[in-house]
Length: 325
Image (cartoon, rainbow, N blue to C red):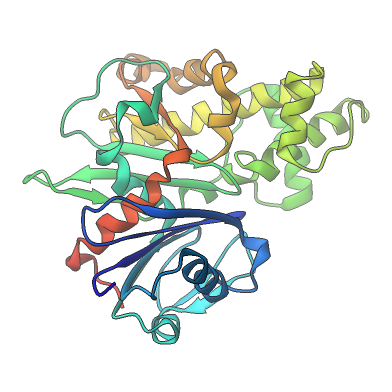
């Protein structure tokens, strides 16, 4: 196992791990577990290595759902924190690269096959143009790719999910005011995440004098909408897809993402065909004079089952100029 590499995609809810025998190798022993099962990231990695029956690899790349701005890493939506240098030493790694999980997913975009994608509107991508990426899950990841003159793709590392969310309708304004009273700042992530969908539903309940049903998980909202035909749950999903369309359109305009916009995260894939017929695409294009600019831009939903962010993490190891400990 002298040249093996450990790869991780660490979200606020689940951790995905796999390993490669070397650059370009297939992913082995894909492992998905709730983060809550482990006291720390180190404990999760050690459990994985033991279960996979491999020696500790000598290098690792970890995509993690929070900013990576120095040696100390503290997750936004999970109570895990660690020192990169201490983790590298504790695991006996020769090299460790830690990057934002959506930066890792952005690096995976050139590797995505048609079988991993479902197009929602638009036409063909413009070769060499910037690419946008966002995805609601436990939080809201935002990234993208831009291309150097030599064609080298450069992933973006930012925290666009925490940008302020804007209302487009009187109803959206009312609901954002309800959320503002609760949270203060209402970021895009406050709505476009699992907890955000729950909060949207509760805000609608408050506005309607507490009709509907008390819920605590986003899957409760989708079950009420699709299985029980709950009007407030369906309205919450429609608001969710509309807000997502607006934020995705903003990202496309900001980056000039004529190469397409990709939707990652765990929520949108579970909405299936309903999402394809939702108001997402209309809101994506609803930018006044720039509707014609956005209309040709394709959007794709990424199937998360193939763990694409792990391949993106591997690409980070293939790039010595990206640094790492």
